[in-house]
Image 1 (cartoon, rainbow, N blue to C red):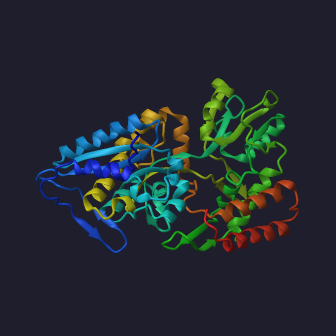
Image 2: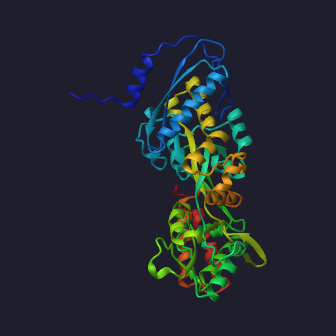
Image 3: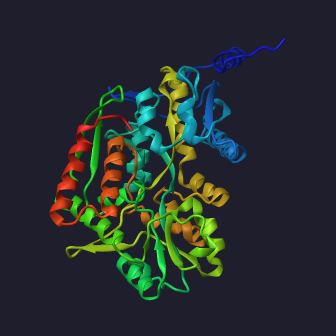
Length: 435
C-alpha cells in the first residue's frame, strides 16, 4: 500500500521528531506594515528551525552548496540554531502554480520578477522593512531597488537581472562606435545593401521604446492585488518622442521587422540583430569570431538623444507569510537566508557557476565580470532598462495596437501619431485588468 504525505504533514512529522531546547533571543520590529527580524539565538541552547526552499531543479546542487555556507556562517557568528532546509524543485517562472494552499507551500522561493503581480495577488510576498530593507538600500543601485519593488514597497531580494535583449552584431562590418546609434547602424547597413533585424511588431521589444524619453506607466494596487488606478503619461511630449522613434526605425529600408532567429541561409545580409540574451550562444555560432554585443543604441528625436529602452527583468527571492504563519524564528531565518543568497559573494558565485549577471552594487564592478561581454552588456543596460514588475496587461495590448498601425503605414502625419498616442494612453488607464 502506498502512503502519500502532504508537504504540510511531512513538515509536521519532521518537526515533531525534533527536540528543541532553550529560548530564542530574536528581536522583532513590527511597524504596522511588515516584519523586520534580526538574527536569532546567540549564546543560548540551540533551536531546530525548518524551512522549505523552492528553486530550479538544474541549480539544486549549486544552491544547496550556498545553503551549507549559510549554515556555516550562522555558526561562525555565534548563532546556535540548527537550520534544516528542505529543497523543493520548482522553476522560478512556474512558482505561481504551486496550488491553492500556499500555507503548505515554500517559505522562501525563487521567482521571475514578471510574476510579481500574480504573487502579490496571492498574498505570498512578505513586505521587507526595517533592517532587511536597509540591506536592499545598501546593496543595490536604482535598478536592483526597482527590481525589489512592487506597489511602492520592497517585496523581494533580487539576485540577478538576466532577462533582456540587446545588440548582437558582426564586428567585421560595424565598429563599436557604429553601434552606439541606431541611425548610424541603419544608414551604414543600407549603403552596403545589408539589413538589421529588430522585432518591432512585438510589444516586448517595440513597446519598450515608448519609455525611451521618460514616459512611464505606474500601477497602484489594493491589498488584495486588484488594480486601483493606472497613471500613464505617454500622451505627453515624452511619449510622443518614443512613438516617433518607433516610426523612424520602422520606416527605414534597412530594417527587417523580425526576430530573425534562427537566421536562414537567405539571411546572410543581416549584420546585426536586436534579440534576447537567451539567443546569444546562437549568434556567437552564426557570426563566429566576428561576434560582438552592445547595449541598446541611442536615437535622436527632435534634438533629444536617448538610449532605446529595453525591458530587463530578473530573478529574486520571495518570502511566503502564509507558510511562516507568524513564527518569528522561521521568519527571521527566511529573511537571513534570502539576504545571504543574494549578497555579493553569492551573486559572484552564481556568475561563475551559471554566468548570471549580478545586480549587487559591488559585484557588478568586480573585475571577473569583464571576462563575459554579454553579462557586461546587460549590467551596462541597468542604467536605462525598464522592469516589468507591475506593467498592466493593457500596456501590452495598446502598445501592440500602436505598433501595428505604425508598421502597417496607417499613421501618415504627426497629427495622426498624436491622436493614436493619446488613444493608447487613455486605453491603458481605463483598462485595470491585472497583468
